[in-house]
Length: 478
Figure (cartoon, rainbow, N blue to C red):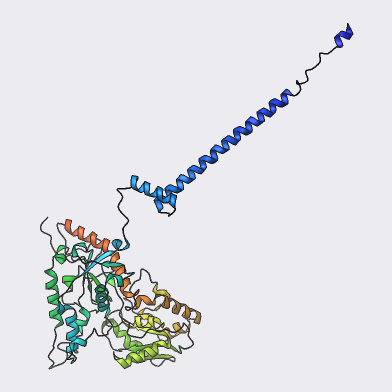
């Protein structure tokens, strides 16, 4: 009995393999599921990336065969109402230049030549002088647009399409047509009247539809000489004035907000040598008129202080061809060039200094400088207030303390910005003036719209935005 109890039922030969087989099947199933899931994810990612890149290619214009097909389809089906991209010229400010009567432009050149004995007017040309920027601006808009590549503005042939209107009067040349100012030389009979020209110019402008439309606010006038258009300035002060400074302009006639400060045309030859001080033996150089009016009276005081200083050359001289040659040699061989105020705060000498790579020493408390939105003048010039400049020995001590390395830094910066002060450079002064004028357009449009809705202007109150606009008028109708 006990032996029977010990007898065990024999196991099936496959019974021990079954669990292992089940485990293997389970493992294979998991691997298959994982592989399938990964495959699906890869296929999804591939198509998603492909379609996204194709869509991006269509949006950005990438030039591949597949992308261009997608781009064409998307553009055709979904973006048909979008306007075409504006061309570069369509983005630029459009300027219409008036075809002024000859007496305001080339007629002034002819009168200048006649006053100096010329008998053949077919050979006359605009004469060189420090305010001849007006000639270069006129020349610029007289050229075809193909020759004006890089200009910030484009010419408008139709005044209806213009944003701004340029009045190409030679107002600065008009001042010097007569060899002597009227009334300054007894017995002389003037052949030309600048005052008459000014009056006739404004009368002509006031007859123009586009001047009357916005009271001249969208017009641009070059008045480089501080005395240019002095007789009629109140009648054109709404326009954007291109001025050398505000020395002869009242605060209600001009401002940095409304107008543009432009450089004088340099009269000294551009220095084309390398930077360095080895050939610049003179510490400080000045050549110009010793006796000036108003703020320029400081010149005589500086002469008295500096004319006996060692390594300082300071000479009295007026405009002449020989004096320009002497000034060129002096500036090209000096480390620093003195730039005191003239009859007004600015003077041509500053720009002569810059193109000569002679570090300007500026003594003019009220000076305004061109293109200060892009030029930091502290990097190219030394500024000294008038009171300090008159302390004995102060200027010379200040200059002797400037290291050679610092002078080279000044020269390097001047060379970098020199094109801003060369009117004949195709990417120089003219383009920079137009760039600043173009930046005025939003303000001009603001003032035009503001004028239209004002019912009354208080002539005793300054403009609320300090724009130095004409506040003398009363608007009596809605």
